[in-house]
Length: 62
Image (tube, rainbow, N blue to C red):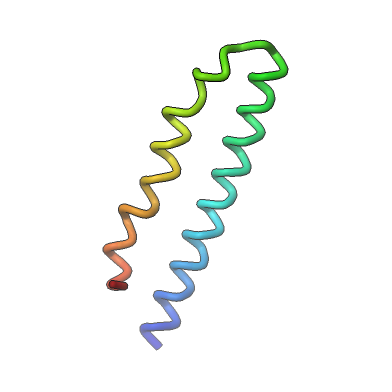
């Protein structure tokens, strides 16, 4: 039962992580189309991408 809860949390986390990537990607392409410097986007994108992975410790998974 506890494993199911963890699996559910993990699935939601992975989905929200994927949604974040999609949002970041659409923001990035908009900025490129507007001619804004491409290098403005990657640093925050990298932070957002890494943070969910760092927070996996609470799931109790190895």
